[in-house]
Image 1 (cartoon, rainbow, N blue to C red):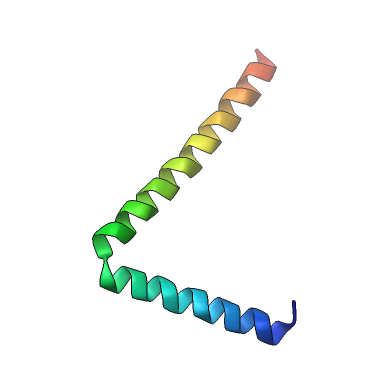
Image 2 (tube, rainbow, N blue to C red):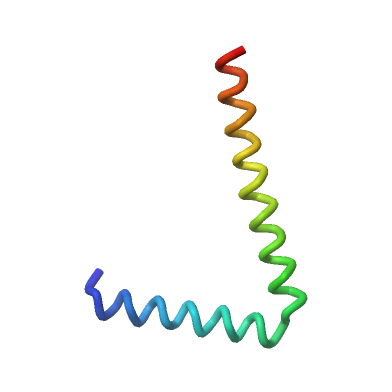
Length: 55
């Protein structure tokens, strides 16, 4: 991807995220919480997997 296009794409994403938070902060918080829950569940799953390898 050309650097200019990548820069434009990043700015479009940032502007969209700011717009989403300003127009609906509760919904944005729910999305962040859901993403955080998925990340922590994934790390917990990795932990269980490696723990089962050593047991």
